Length: 164
Image (cartoon, rainbow, N blue to C red; front, side):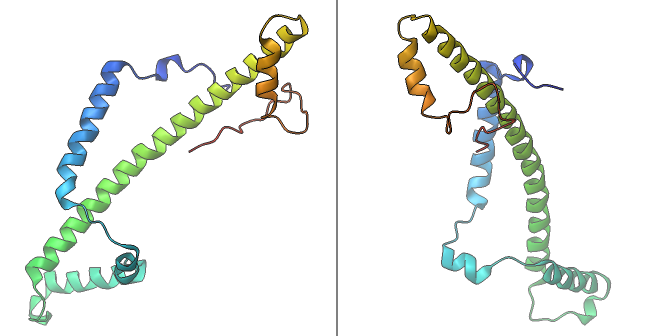
């Protein structure tokens, strides 16, 4: 199925405002909870790998099922709060990542659509320059620098549009 002219996927001004307001509200709500680690701190604290998550989960299981086996040196209220907060954050990261993935995919399609339209316009400018129409040769000269090896745009690449 060819993807071109995504008329129904464009954002209206109202939709843009709604989304921007939602992102602003999300940023404001998360701001007091965010952490900014330096590269050294990031290295120091690292990230808990899957093996260590299993240890945390097993310690939590023991605490929940047999609290008499738990160390009195651990603040178990803080442990539970950290555990719950981490799980909550992870769930939101997954939800947000899903949105990011969807937006990146939509952006790729719009980039591709723009690129195809740009190639069509370049082909039109090349045609018009052969008719000596004013200004088209300058346009062709400016655009041809982006095409290496003198390839014709008739061999349109499947997707060379940048994805970021």
